[in-house]
Amino acid sequence: MEYPILKLKPGKEVSLKYRHPWVFSGALQDTDEKISHGSIVRVSNPEGEILGTGTFSNKSMITVRIFDFSDAEINREWLLNKIRKAAEFRKFLGYGNPDTTGYRIVFGESDGLPGLIVDKYEDVLVLQISTKGMELLKPVLIDVLTEIFSPSAIVENSDLGVRNEEGMPQASGVLFGKFDEPVTFRENGYKFFCDPLNGQKTGFFLDQKDLRSAVGKWSENRKVLNLFSYTGATSVYALKNGAASVLNIDGSDWALEGCAKNAKLNRIPAAKIKTEKADIFAWLGRPIHEPEYDMVISDPPAIIKTRNDIESGKKAYHFLNRAAMRLVKDNGIFVTSSCSHYLTSADLRMILHRAAVQNNLTLRVISEYSQSPDHPVALNFPESCYLKSFIGLIERE
Image (cartoon, rainbow, N blue to C red; front, side, top):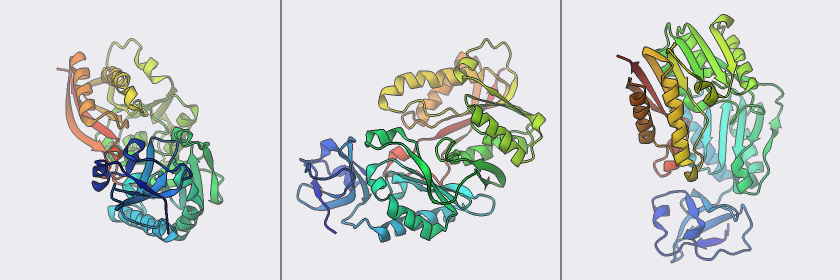
């Protein structure tokens, strides 16, 4: 198959040789205006040697997203093999067993499929498509996913700001099969519901499996506060592992209703789980006189979304962590996360240190977590490492 060839400027081929999948506009020589948005192209060095094949964007600063670091043909067979390989890796990791039927199958660039997320909940697949190039491949993609997984339904929830940058409208709906109610799935033996057409992301935060399991380990007999609770998955882990009670706080009525649904799915007594709707920044800003919780969990949405947000975002994370720590009793557990790629683990560690000092307490780090391995961190793509979490012991004396 003949694809248009874009040549790199001299000295700009190093990134591709080290297999970073993004080619920025400034790295390319003149681009043919006849190349349509979303087309498949090849990228070469100045001498004409093909270094990769990917999709083209005339709207984003990322002009090419590389699918294959060779002179490849991106067709049905290529997609079939690539997605099968991604699925086999998740099987190797142990996902798809009867205890865990909700997990990520495709994680964009980490699986060599830029612009594509595929999550599996029982026999329902949920997609997110963020680039024009992947959008144009969608008919073939649905065909391939149907062949590999035989799903009862394929649902799209591409409510993504990045689609605006690609000149595409938001998109959601049923692409294949029948889907008219939330699906129930299992994670580490616990039951949860997923409503991809109304929930955040693909309907559930699958990347925090490992942290949730760890929270369960430290929950016995503890009074727990879960900030930014969403539908209370972490609370389920805490309560099923002996927590005395949990208060879920979130800004969404829909999410808090989901806390009750997930508690009921796991036969948790209603008296043990409470909910409160609040702006959490304002809620934490109230005068607090005494710490009252044995465990506090803070897992906010991404606060730093671009490089321009870094400084203001660090201040917001500092406020959250300093204020949340104040609520933890002596010898209590503090759990905190950031899913902002632009906030590094070292940044968060420093924020926690400053917050602890300002609260006149010691935070002993028990463990540190990244995203679960069904969201693999690719060494050639540092941007794939975004989630960092700490569990620590609060010492007040």
